[in-house]
Length: 304
Image (cartoon, rainbow, N blue to C red; front, side, top):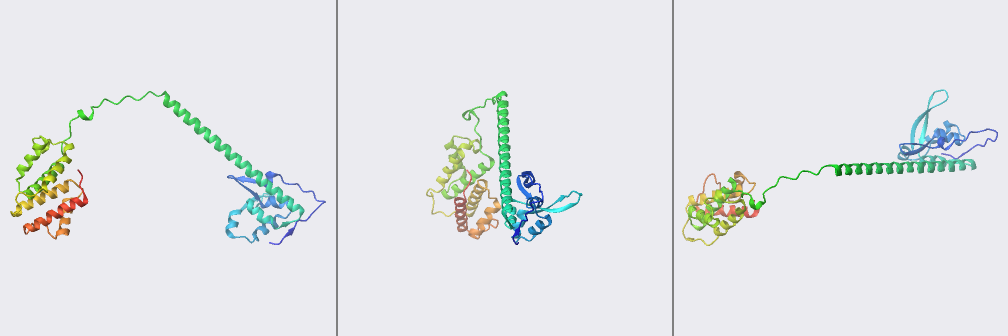
């Protein structure tokens, strides 16, 4: 845009716009209009519109600082105008020269400053009022709570030491029996003898009488006896005993973890190449499966 000298007309009386005419605000954002600029700088509004359209600024700057709007003239016609931000006005006013134009630039910028200060003050007042309302609300809620009757005490409950001890679940009982079968295979014992020894250790008549608090100790007790030196290591074990031990250990793993029977069978198939559904071909297969089962339990863990 070429520089434009503002004409001076000493004989023409011009009504100077007030600060309210020069700067307005909407949604907390101050702006001026091309109409106010034309009036203050004594220019034809059409020329101001043309000057804005010819500004060599980026599209993003134009979109942010020049908004197309309209106004109603004295005859009731709707005519176009622009809304300009502070930066938009400064960019446009750079092309206005002369002493009088410089004075109006100062007045517009002072008006922008005054409007921004007023808007900031309004925001501070609103925030102060909001905080005060929030404080009053909190005080009212606190007072309401203080006036409320205290809650009724909870009914008395027996201490833990006086309550009936919980017994083993069915899954825990089956898991423990599976571990006992594994012990019997490795130690060449009869299941009845191993069970009787375990019950005597905990001073109970059957596994159904065992408390939850003793389950962990029972598992460790059986596991410890399981890997003691076998009483008869030279004797070969027959396949039915291996099958019972495998089923017992698999049952223990199943009931002590999130793995299903199918999961455990698949694990054995992948580790040993042996299908439990088809049965054991030899005692050596039984040993392979037992060690694979115990390795899986050790690696993946159990819930006890």
